[in-house]
Length: 259
Length: 347
Image 1 (cartoon, rainbow over the protein chains, first blue to last red):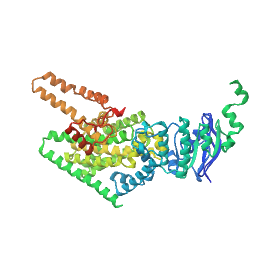
Image 2: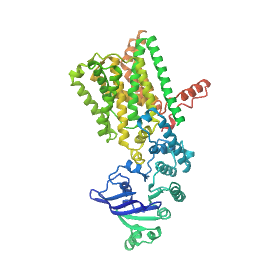
Image 3: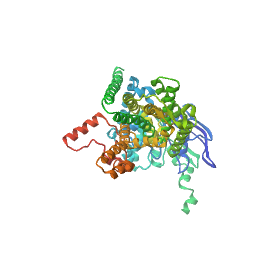
Image 4: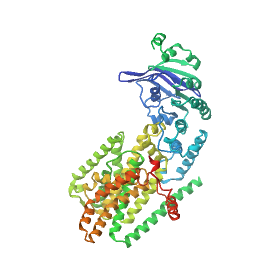
């Protein structure tokens, strides 16, 4: 069953058609990759799905519900949560505070409960603090729980951003270039990490990736985007042998000869 | 659930206890010490409420608000007019003043909080001038440029202190709740906050409303303390006063705001008394310099602070009993003070 269905998605910025007539779907429990050269419109698709932009045309359905016209926070509260290409943490907060802030959705108490610290406040707060602690343990961040987010090494910041997204108990996780800036060793760890969290939290994962080897080994299905249009789709091995994909990445043979 | 109820009752107990202690202490000061000291402490208390309000919206939520004095004026005039013209009892008009300021906060905040940084600052500053223009031109109701005289005296030191204690209790609860964490998330990174499902507009407007209500409370306390209101009291310098208190005490530190209010209120008084003291020795020129030149020291205080403690005296932390105790213990054993927030980690 498709968790996310995108049909004929188009967005224009003035004269530029950033995404043109893209149709794709992400199936429940799968890890689906979205690849393409720089400027192909991958992040734009994420921004459209998460409500940052409104599409010029087209439909986006999440579990049968249209996401078009929703604000980013509404999309997130439905269980579609994303990370960013250039990590966006709450930089001056600790690891624990980052996760706990994001766990606010589990705290169903009102402003008055918050002002007076009613029994209801204490009940939900103990729940979300337990949930945040668990999450830090599961993602092996508990040793760094009191560290300020901006002081963390790059790879750990990425993991924290994913932990923060998981704090919302999402069902669809959108990862924007999770391997950006990572060395081969970190990339290998990331691949198994993505599979692990998928199984642990019963997630569906849709990810943008620039590292071809990461994308190929982690994805179960892939979409290739070029100049805002869908170029190919299929399993990683199908994509690897697709002539149009090779052309888009390496250029045509004649042009290639000229350098 | 029982454990949670116990915690709730313990929280109320803390409020009850600190409120009674504050009341008894303030009453004793009022009864025993000279009026000058009592009055000064009342002003410190009023300024603390103002600073706490500004800290919530600008220190915690990161929305630079330059119209704070406008909301003070709204609260002060509302409460005063309700008491003078409609003969409403003080507690009711006091609350109504805050409610009206909060309502104005909603009206201004809702459209303008889409703006960020400098733009928001300019809009809120403009709002303050609108309030002053309205006050200056509604002479039959507010007395206009003549001022509003005959405001009943109600802000005794115990009343003002009680307001500070209750405000501090509520705010410290609030910043430790999900609402408080969402405020800080908005300040840290709005886009990230939205991506984790935080309705940033809602939390910005909420912070703005609560902050305006506190400004309204403070304005009302001020009116009932001075027994006179004039639009010029609430000019932009009044806002800047709150800004300096919060920055001196530390953005995002509630107790810092109170420390800041204490320092900023006392500095001119200290210099004034020093000038009189020096004059007593016949050093007239030195006395004159202190009397007129204290602003230089005031500015110097900030320059030194910016160099030594760029994040304010409290550096974003809170003054707690535990902190005070360990600080005192270290002082006694002379082992160096390590618990004190250091400026090293702040760069």
